[in-house]
Image 1: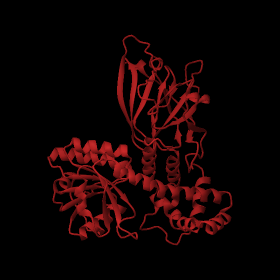
Image 2: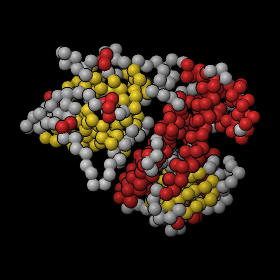
Image 3: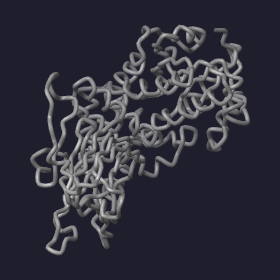
Image 4: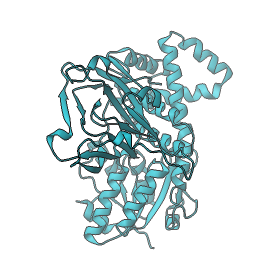
Length: 464
């Protein structure tokens, strides 16, 4: 395929620089800035990227679409492009260049190919073109990945990884796991030392024994808040990739919590263009520590209930924990008792629940229960989710003094026992999907609601 016009969604920090370099190579670069921020519009203009009036116009003109978005926007962007492809009957190549897990990129592939489009899995490694000491690497895979060889040269190095969708994203996940993961570890250790009054001694030791680490700390840690908000979702995608490989997810889930904290600092209001270049590491650490100490500035601050990791033992009085992906082939775990149906005329209601992420700390305002049926949640596409459960008082209301909170991961489903008071489904980190099973007869008796007054505020056990 002859690639002449390339659409970039969206021309942010990475996208506009890629666009500028490709424009200098003779490609026509376009985008659609409808609904974008003034900063993104300014970056696009500075790079000479042409703004089309609509998504439809962009798709109709493009030979190739490069999706370079925050991870949380990757799937919605693909869905919007797929719908437009079908509506106008034009199918440009679509390359997902986002920092997403192998599972996420395969879902995006399904969305694009179902619309008749051709899909390329791409992982961008390194800083934007011209910002580092080597070319920006575009690792690519998929049946049509060869088409991206047209981008190779002058600041961009395209590296082919075969026909399997997911390989390119996997190498991006492993790379970012070390780079951004290390930076969060540095920030966590340094902020802890600052809070404990040890910064000078700690830095003296690091500079003496590991000078290359000290150099990276001083170069990267003060500027982390500027990108922290965009990198929260990336940590969740890395955790998912590790989990799918059978490895612990917790380190990068913790890295996401650290980025969430940094995103609450005053420094996070700056941009890469406006960040104070004279701010020292020590000055940044003072800001980080003040944010940790201040009321309401972290998920663990100003809370009256702390959520703990979900275990079968701790949850036993409220329901069952379903271990997903851990059983041996040929085996089956049955949870029929948890799905007890106490009404002869009720039918099994099978639904898919889609939830937006809920920021923490969370103030509890509602509880619900299902007096005639258990309820099962099976994660389909999820990072973490929060459960709040309570026994009943003698008069049947939830006993909020005995409320318990748990955090589950994507490898854990749950069954609520019949009549257990629980908080509505609460996704964390990113948009989520769950398969939900319950026996209903479509009456008001299916679900009882209880409005909580002066409810507790819930946080998560650890920031770092």
